[in-house]
Length: 204
Length: 220
Image 1 (cartoon, one colour):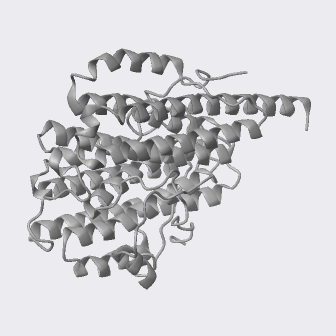
Image 2 (cartoon, rainbow over the protein chains, first blue to last red; image 1 turned 120 degrees about the horizontal axis):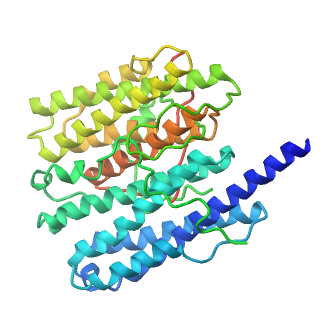
Image 3 (cartoon, rainbow over the protein chains, first blue to last red; image 1 turned 135 degrees about the vertical axis):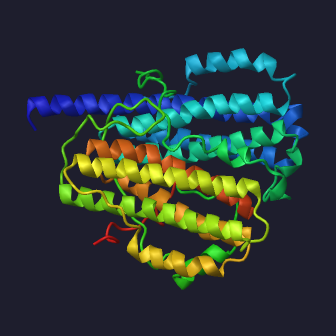
């Protein structure tokens, strides 16, 4: 390996580690957010699927967090254990409005997070040079995309006064408005405009 | 990487279809990777070009991906005709809206993939996956309910999504990577909503699996 190519490889590895650290910082924030929502009155009084979704999604974000940190340490980087600060600050601004905002307020906080997770993973999948990392980011992005679709579907149902339809399957598909499927599918291509800067969660 | 499944799903019509080769008999295929600046909600621009290790493989992968998207357009067009004819009973507006929206998505995806092919100096691929076309033609008339239709559709969507994901780990062309990265998660959203209609958990995996991805040989 020439000096130039060695330098390029080091830069690529540095970029990969920073992307992984930023992604991990978003995942741990999301995990904490879903866990903290579980005891809320809006969640406890909602159809059981809402609490199941919160718990399952929290676990999935934790799985992402662990896998991203494994990838960091395998590359010689420092594991990222802390939440993304700018996004956490924004969430902190939203939380005081949650108690009086009904289930929609809880869902809106989650949507805010998932939109950024989704966009960030897609953007990083486009940005990193290592095919294995690309595969990792996109395999996570698809799951975040599903979270977002479920949240947007739930939001439509709650706003339509159809909380009783939040079930698997919905008891009466004929009662669901078309927006219950079109709002979650508003983009033919994953948006990347809300992606966090690659080095935002970098450590070390 | 884990493909951990949340919850358990017993043998379903989908499993039966797979086992019988009704749905998986043909082949689902797709595309691959690259890296490029894209910030809009639309398809990525094609200005950035990366080195391609094996352009013919990249082309084959993209052609197969386009063929799957073309098949999606065909399948949802047929499904909508049958929905309006009452083959699955009275059509719920939410299901009709889903089919219309997803058909649009597949059409947009096919166009974006073909733009990449064109930018590479190749012809666009405008035909549906030839093997899977027969599967869809044979399978659709046998479906009797919205549940049947969802199960049938999710097999296709799952395969398309997983193929795009798998390809991202293999492609080298920057344009192909950029487009595929923005398509794959959208297919996962299709899957999630179909699972809801089926009565299954909509995000069952921690990581998108690739076991149902199709090899890039369907269009050869």
